[in-house]
Length: 117
Length: 116
Image: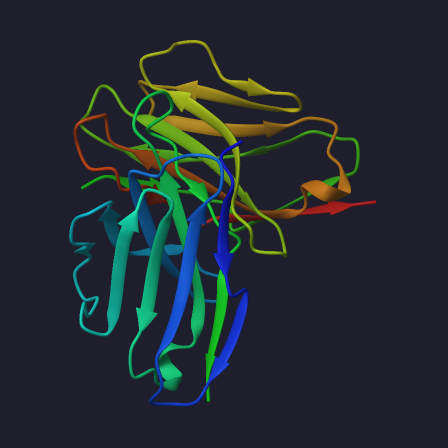
């Protein structure tokens, strides 16, 4: 149980284009989803927290107009990188948690590697 | 602010032997949650073990166990009978109590190498 998927696993795009990454909870309803960014050989950096049906809460220094997050249902959250630039190239990981038993635990997706040319 | 420290950037162990990864944290809370996550080369974050601070009993999951020392704010992970598949980055993480922030605070990670 507690499976989270991400799509796509890899994406290459041209500078100036937008890219959408999907995060799905496959066997549970995710009341909260989290988006992280991970640079090589570093730990995870939280970008934003989203609750179903409400606006995402962004961490300090994360541009909300550049990284658009939508959590429209209890099983799907999307991250859209708008007008991507080479410095946005990174590994993006989502996680999800639910209310109730083990609500304290985050389950992670497999990540998406974004390369901006 | 809470912090998590993993003082060992890299560790190595021989296959079938035991290794302990250290983690210390700083918090003023009395109730919280602690986790160890494993990130193999595939980069999928996998939950290894979870500990609730109000429970004195150390959590165990098959070959993985923790030594939770609440007063010392220490949460080490012991891997017994190490296997080649245990090779990965291991991250220690802290979560505040229910009703507070849901954010995880991660340590910088320990890279574990398992030698055949």
